[in-house]
Length: 121
Image (cartoon, rainbow, N blue to C red; front, side, top):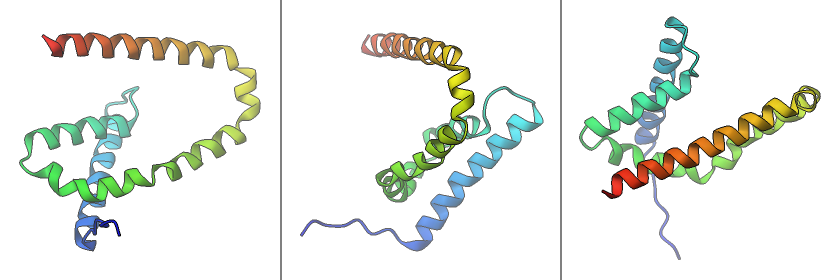
């Protein structure tokens, strides 16, 4: 029988609180500074910096985060509903959406290749 990782409820609450606090801070920063960047993205960058500079933070957040990642497909349900709800608009604006997707994908591939090349040196 495979070993199942058990997460202590207090650790789960602490992890959820940490993730939500960083998302709220990101939302606040985006709103107060009127930035064109979504708040959760800012929160993710702040969380990354926290994990890099705070000793053992990643180890404390890892068990609950791994559990969330196992069930990540549930998080795509709202996006699917949104696509269904706004199907007419997506159909009407398919060209700019397609161009944005292609350009951003190509840019991401190029940036990733450059970063990998730079890290290999």
